[in-house]
Image (cartoon, rainbow, N blue to C red; front, side, top):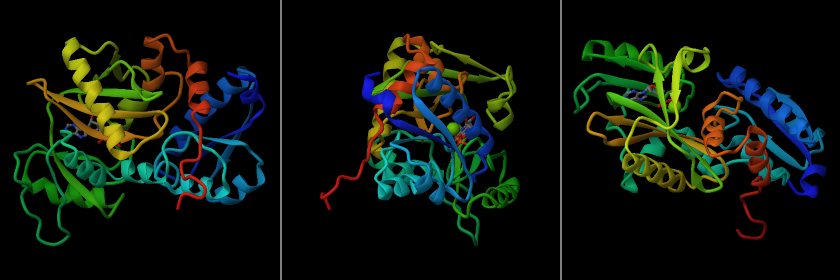
Length: 309
Ligand SMILES: Nc1ncnc2c1ncn2[C@@H]1O[C@H](COP(=O)(O)OP(=O)(O)O)[C@@H](O)[C@H]1O
Ligand SMILES: [Mg+2]
């Protein structure tokens, strides 16, 4: 890091009021610890509904956004920081908002010819049977950490799963279940990191499998051919650009038995504890956790140009 970076007052913004508050606090603490050990003037800013006032009061030069989910990862905090003219890490307002909404993101993937699992948006009234075979994956459009997600085998279970998902977001989607491998690709400095394969021991990568040590195996390199690895990285980068992301992000994909990959979502504030996926992939190419955090801080910026409107 250059000298000027060390003199910047970095605020690691964490906590928030989404369902992913606890995960955010873990991400934020790991980032804060690394920055402080690296000699940065970093402080933790644990926020809840008071975020506007806190950002005004804390007098920071750069915001390291460690908030996951709604009111943090979805463009709202990014907009606040743009207004306050405080450079921040990761994606801007529009990309954050698009990535947070799985329906909008998938519509954009389709426009760009990026494969994504087939889906329907169920109507509130007459529920139609999806035009693709079960199992069906039912998801709230704007959640993370597998919150509110259900899998059903038949039409009978669909209505109840949709009702459950609607408890988290009025907008819900029903996707074709992709049987096969779960893959994820971190994007750093505009380049894809090595592909990680996620192999949950229980078969389903739910909240518990994600955050309970030992419940999931992470394989890097993934058990796919070099050619598939290249293709998955290419798709991940294409999805990142299609949404207009900036800085570090992580793209989730599923690969079926025929080796066809589908992008499911882009995470614009990926988990950043020392055991999270992006740090694992970075380690594969010799980037330490501190170096990773440094790169992300160096890329912090305002995305809305002054005078460009
Ligand atoms: N279409 C699908 N087919 C099979 N499994 C899926 C599908 N969509 C999601 N999953 C499973 O559910 C998990 C969470 O889904 P995802 O769309 O990544 O939402 P989020 O991580 O934001 O909760 C995935 O990691 C995967 O294990
Ligand atoms: Mg995911």
